[in-house]
Length: 332
Image 1 (cartoon, helix red, strand yellow):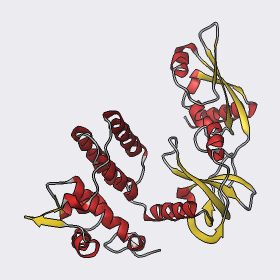
Image 2 (cartoon, rainbow, N blue to C red; image 1 turned 180 degrees about the vertical axis):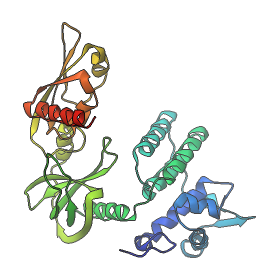
Image 3 (cartoon, helix red, strand yellow; image 1 turned 90 degrees about the vertical axis):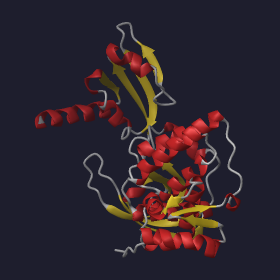
Image 4 (tube, rainbow, N blue to C red; image 1 turned 180 degrees about the horizontal axis):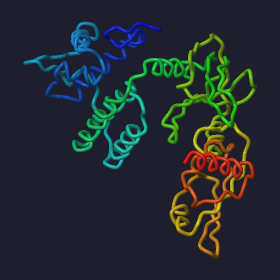
């Protein structure tokens, strides 16, 4: 296991330049200055490292910093003019910030830095809300290995290079969870609203097909010198439209459900999947149809409706839920 120093770990040394830029962005967001200890808390570093970075901004990056009575700041001349947004665009940025903070289960320094920059162009009330949202994000747990894997995969995706990963697959349908080594062409990194996680979507050369890998389950990742040709533009996005959430590499499966009258209206008012079809029934119930990539993900949504939904198809999903409820009853 890597030894971690006061600068945030062995991986942070390689990202020192990016961290210095984040320090500069925080200073820019605080025109009246900020204390070194508050800066350290915002970035998840030690106070000693914060002092080092503040000194390095002017000494190494030639940014005009200032300090006065314990507060540090940066002159406006260090940055280009802020991004100009309409009120509606600013609200879109704010909503994106709130959504990401709600779904992020770990601290992402790059996400925090990006929103620090975007906040510069927002009206004052929204800027304050973004800052408070980032304070919430800052309290999320740290996972240096995860952040490092995202950085490496991002570089491989941008350079169109093949990666080799050691991956611990999940356990589905009674199969034992086993680790394997995979050679993958990284096509996309995609967030999941259902699991609050990031996924690598790419071509698995060993299994000769598109596969989805949860980044938290990647144990090691190595970028190889080999390059790959990306798929035709829009190919992955088209496949993801068939996914319920993030898994697009399963066979297309038609799911048909019947919702009781008491919840039919709530179901009908939301587009749960692009392919859904609604068939209101004479008794007030609702038959809901969609064609999705496998049933692994849609299964959890169906279970969330409890006894207010009946699975009409496929038969395998119907039996799966029946067995699940039996096990739950046995444990009650």
